[in-house]
Length: 439
Image 1 (cartoon, rainbow, N blue to C red):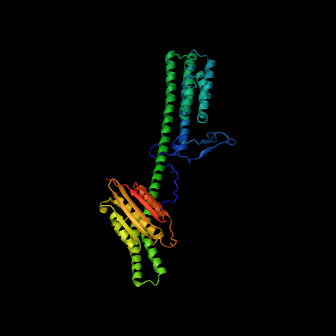
Image 2 (cartoon, rainbow, N blue to C red):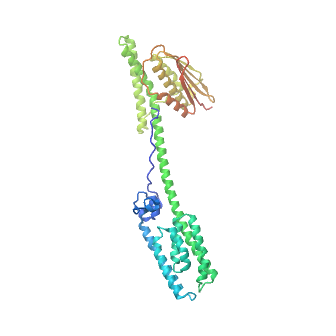
Image 3 (spheres, one colour):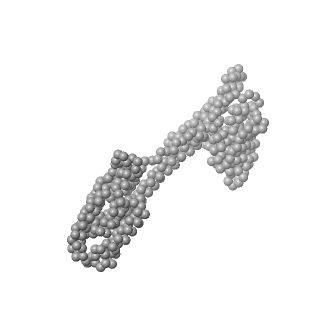
């Protein structure tokens, strides 16, 4: 009863609604972000025969409504910038008509390739490096490809491809010189635009990673809170089980001993029968009172109801007297000057240990003399020793779970002390507990 029953770990909590963008509907988020924030959302199945390829190709997230708006916006921006580039290349006197026509064809193909940016962001960005150098009309599509690369791929891809895009800008400005801007200004403007597009994409990527980290932290905090609540419940169950065992085992053992005496000695004198019946009645009454108190704690609603006073070390004399009335031979050797001055928690722990030790001696060594020794002082600690020799006769088999001593060891450890127990060389049993006593 000391809480040794296995307890299952709580299942990871499903992510709940989180304030801000984490609580937004999946259709209002980018598909890459919605797939992680809403893992139960349907995914686009992969094509047959691609099961052996990477999971990204086999399980591509379905485009959301926001993705469609973004894709149309990127395509429109690429076309709009391409139109300005086509107009500039047409009116450029340094470019022939055939080169201008080829430039516009490459720009149109680049704008159409913008729709492939989600599936192949790295490949599209690589292709756009030479295309952007050869075609001024493809400038918008090149910017969109670099932005997509910075959003969906790590820094190493962005650094290599972005560096290559910046490196070809002087070559493109030399092949197609601007009629209005000097060469150096045109190169600087192109580098500035490229860096702005890449920086914007990296900012979007970092913001998405921040949202994912916030979501993971929220789920982790929820799981930790559930685990702490489960552990608190388990500790409370263990404490209640230990308290019920310590309180009720003593009373019920008295009932068992005297009921067994009445059963095996029906011809006993009437005074002995009356005394045994009185002990049974009193023990049953005390057990019911203790049980009501524990049930009141479990219900948690009777805060106004006065509880029974908790035992202290000063009540050890009454415990020994009760055991003597039940027919036990108990010798109490108290070397504590003022038992009433012992701290309440310390005295209660020592009382419960002595109570359980006397209960075990009554069950497993009936008729043997039990010696209880209590000694200690503030700053030295409190030592409680319970010893009994081998029982004088045969001991009837008494059912027991063996959890009492385990519970006492846990109780002593929770109080910062220690408890040792075991059979003695003379066939008896000894138990010794040391508990810290603050000065």
